[in-house]
Length: 114
Image (cartoon, rainbow, N blue to C red; front, side, top):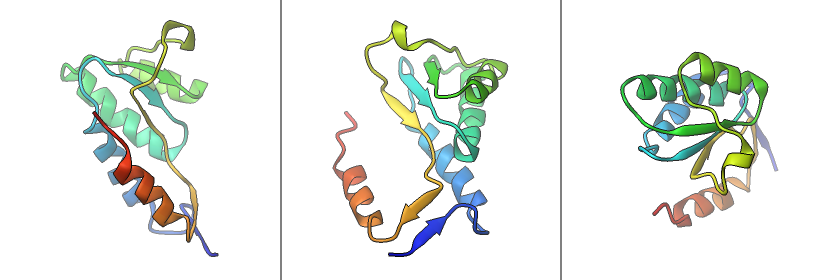
């Protein structure tokens, strides 16, 4: 099986687009998990803009780096002890093993988003 790596050229725009599109699924009242890394960075940036526009969410970060960026952008941060579940988490995959992509897409398509 081959490996597709985000570090090989041409993926940064795709990662940014994917992150920004993922933020479109977030709506008022959600608890949002914030991943770490370049894809999460773009998601947090877009989420910060939406919060400034009036989106009412709470977030929990997987790293100090993501938490600090979120706070800087006005995203309310909570702790794990304050919640029972997370509605959605945005993070990136820097490596995908070819052959498992179909499995990932099937899981994505069959996930109940309601």
